[in-house]
Each structure stands twice: as C-alpha cells, then as structure tokens.
Amino acid sequence: MWQAARKLLPRPLPRLPWLLTIIAVMGASADHFFPMIAVLFLVSYFVGSERSVTPTVLILAAVLAASSLVKINLFLQALVVGGAVSLDQAIRGGRFRFIVPLVYIISLAGFYLAAGQHLGNFPAFVLYVGAGLHRVRGCRGFARTVH
Image (cartoon, rainbow, N blue to C red; front, side, top):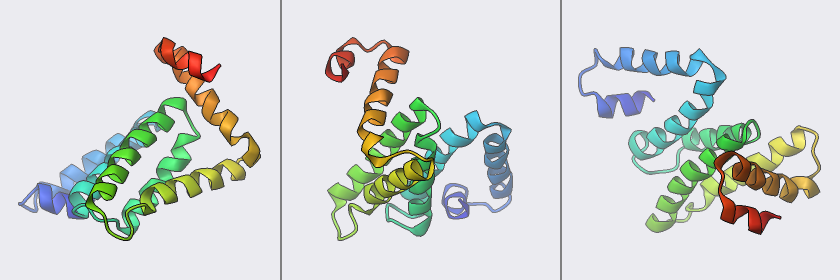
C-alpha cells in the first residue's frame, strides 16, 4: 500500500493520513474488511506493482479465496476482481499469466478442505452459491441452469 500511496500522492505528508483512513475503514467491521481486501487487491496490482504479479498480489488472492467462503456476495466479488486481474495478465501474456487464478483456486480448495468439507462437495457448493445469488438477486435465467 505504501508503494501505491507514493504513486497516488506525490507529497509525503498526505500519505500517512490516507493509509490510516484505509486501515480505519477496514477495521470498522467485517462488512468493511472483506470488500476493502478486494480494493487493496486491485490497487496493489494496478497501481502498486504496476500490473505485475508480486507476492503481495498473490497473498491478497489467497485472502480473497478465504473471504469467498464467508458470504455469497464475497465469492462473486472475488471472482470479479480476480477475473479483472487474470484477464489483464492473460492479455499481457508472459510466463506467469495464470498464476493469480491458480493461487486463488488452490487457496479456495485448501480453505474449503480446512473447513472440514470434502472436495467432492465443492461443485455442489458452487451451485449453492449460484442458487443463493438467484434468490438474493432475483435473476430468473440463472435458476433454470442451476436446477
């Protein structure tokens, strides 16, 4: 985050309040923490590391995988922000272009297993998430493909 603050704010004095504000918002509640992880993931990738995969980006991808198991909307949020970074990496090419989705999937499976679930139940979990989004969002077309 400090690298992103250095790029976004040229003067050093406003950087610390900017970082403290982000920390305060993240620490307010779990409802703020997990969405801010997605924001930090995007800022770290696109601004902080100048669109390259760094250990910080990979760690945040793993944290997004853990947050995907907390709430249904966080799963969708992780897919959207992870998809944006993965799409950018795929377009740009390079030998590590699939590392971010790979870290996300391996972390998601690892956290899923660590929660005491069986890997064979994972497709049912994904369909449950899809059905839950149908009930929450009222998306009629998606329900036909799930049921």
